Amino acid sequence: MVATIVPAGNAAHRHLAIIDIGSNSIRLVVYDGRIRTPVALFNEKAVCALGQGLGQSGRLNPQGAEEAIGVLARFVRLARAMAVDVLDILATAAVRDALDGAEFVAAVERRCGAPVTVLTGEEEAHLAAMGVLCSAPQADGMVADLGGGSLELVALDHGRFAGPHATMPLGVLRLSEASGNVRSRAEDLIEKQFRNIDWWQWAKDRPLYAVGGAWRALARLCLAQTGHPLHVLDNYSLERNESLRLIELISNQSRKSLEKIPGLSKKRVPHLPVAALLLEKVIEYARPSRLIFSVYGMREGQFYKRLPPDVQWQDPLIASCSDMAQTAGRFPEHGEEMLEWMAALFRNETESQGRLRYAACLLGDVFWNEHPDYRAEQAFLRVFRLPFMGLGHQDRAALALAIHARYEGDGDLPEAADARNLLSEEEQRRARIIGLALRLGHSISGGVPGLLRTTRLFGDGDVLVLEVPAGDPAFQPDLMDRRYDRLAKTAGFDHFEIRKV
Image (cartoon, rainbow, N blue to C red; front, side, top):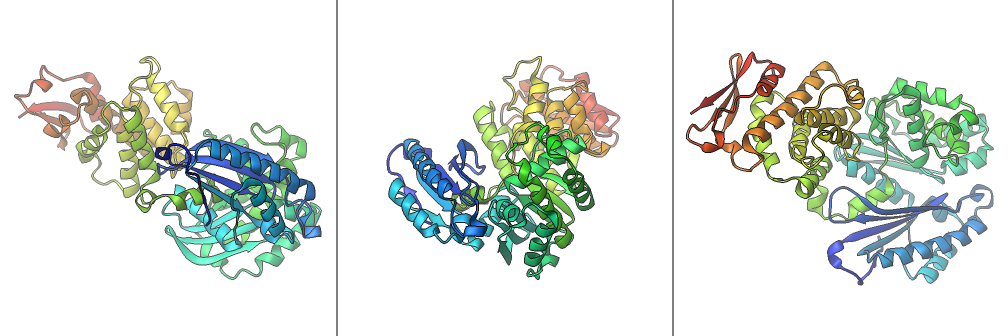
């Protein structure tokens, strides 16, 4: 990839700007390039409809091209004013396929004084998949990225590219125009392309990751239809049969009904039937175990690609929680101690359960400066709704409930009740044990690093025991508190006991 290195400004910022020239819209996003999670410091979109009429004329929309050059000049000027270290300008299917695509690129480069990289279909597909891997490093199955001009499919094998990939002229704009929005014609065009793919079996009984704005709009509709308690699109997951049922239900909605859905852009509504049909057909051919919507795609893939290897390898959830602990916690290093200290209560946990407990320990002191009367509520709501990467809705609910219990949250918060509805009783109990253990650990140590390592928490028959050094004044006078019995009872012990040794 070609990049413009901007020498001006403070190099310590390490900001990364990506301009995505799509078939329908052009978007500038500026990221903080120092951290594992792509945090958008600036995000602006302009709809230019470059690909409008491309299927018939073979050329870019003339009015859209003129508008696009002006938009791109503004975006490059803004990026330079922000003193970004790297500026990537990436063009996708419309520019790639248009007869006058090279002419458009030359005009942009003359006007903006910055190079434009026209992605091949393979490069676009791989960047979309890397966006998914940025969020879910062990993603396994098929990534399907739907844009205005093309549909890309990529096979992933537990975090690695498996080899098969495809790019097809089935973007929502192009398919809408080619079919006249007639379902039977659109089906014929889709079938013609899909029959050429001989590796659909790769995705069978594995997840399908749906990427792209049109499919995010469908996810929003699915959330509305099901009354799902968490309106976070990323990692929203549906079993295959349920996804097909909902897509069919949405397809039968009138345009007026769709326009009434909160948060749904009216500009998306005309193309939703085609987007729904495409997703339905991908699911029918691929037969995945479940459908997972991802808000991370090509731009995040480019961001991920530019990270140093040691940052790429970080777990996105743990990295985000560590950043929060460093910036908002009083004693950030205390999270590691807490993780080890309570480990005896979780001897048979899985790797994914241990990861979630680690995240809870890192967040255990982040909300100390909230108003005491609202601390539990504020902590819960922030964790439940923060844009964490690599976190499914059930795990998000469990993490939020653990932090809620850490601050002695009661059962009156409606959103907490919604979170419990996403979890089994055992998952709820585990989250509460983590939260109560965090509360105990912070109470007896004051959150100060080092003190917990002089104590030991363990089970002795029917008793949950906390051993403390007898001669250490930090543990004098008697620390016994009825709240600690809550931890013992929740963890399956008869009572709690402090032993001085």
